[in-house]
Length: 178
Image (cartoon, one colour):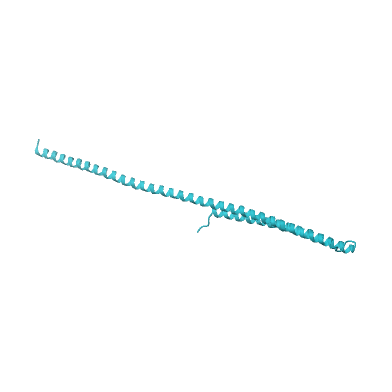
């Protein structure tokens, strides 16, 4: 074989060896770099997932705390409503007692007048009858007004109590935006 051919083959073998060595070296470096890059990206991903999980846990804890605060507030509102109902019932009983006391006072005055011998129907029948009818009408009217006033007061107390309770629940469900 000729020297030129041997030199050409040697150069070709040398170039092939260099290309092979370069690609082998590059492949190893690339694989190492790729593996290192994958590990770095995976570590960042894992850290981000841990942070996200920690934030989710913290948000869940905050939500449960808020639920407990809301439940406590709701119980407080219910207790307040029950207390107000009892007070309203006591006020209604007091109002009935006062109305009954007024009727009792009127009856006592009538009995006192009769016992002291105030004019009877035989002394002046026409005038006494007219005044007696007026007094009976006035007593009945006073009694009806007292009952009506008491009914209006009880209704107003009930509406106020319902409104206060509803406003308390609204404050829990939709708190004011700051």
